[in-house]
Length: 171
Image (cartoon, rainbow, N blue to C red; front, side, top):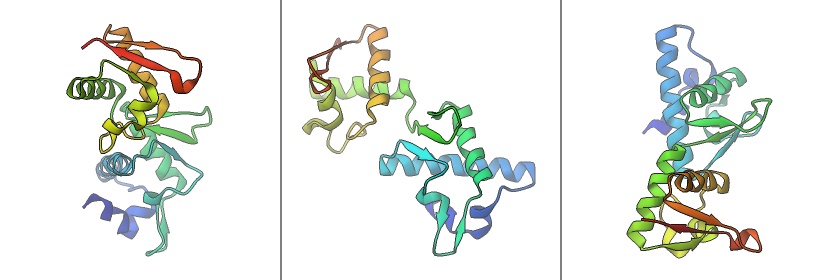
């Protein structure tokens, strides 16, 4: 299991000095972060707050700040994360890219026969339980829906409150 990677003291404390080894280390950590965030439905990682993968109390080790920055910056450079503040301290993790979320939503809508629904039902409706959409970050969801809207596959409409916002799909 990749999650055991963070139990190895040398891997958890510093960046590897040899370029080839460091590239492998960065790749492993990118995969580990994406897999962990997906399994835990986490969307935000802060460099200044505790994140379970970045420390292991059992072996009394933590990743250096520099290593955390390098791993998150690598995800950002691949479009798998975005800095959400100018100081680059908080990162939005995109375990699915926005285009992939849009495709997932379309498939979900087709499978469930949903033509019109609310934004909140997409995030927390009965149909979404047990799916990737359950608890999806609202910002990520809205970006995916706007992409579908640009492609003529959906129309977002506003209600009198955020709970009333909805979407009509053309599938």
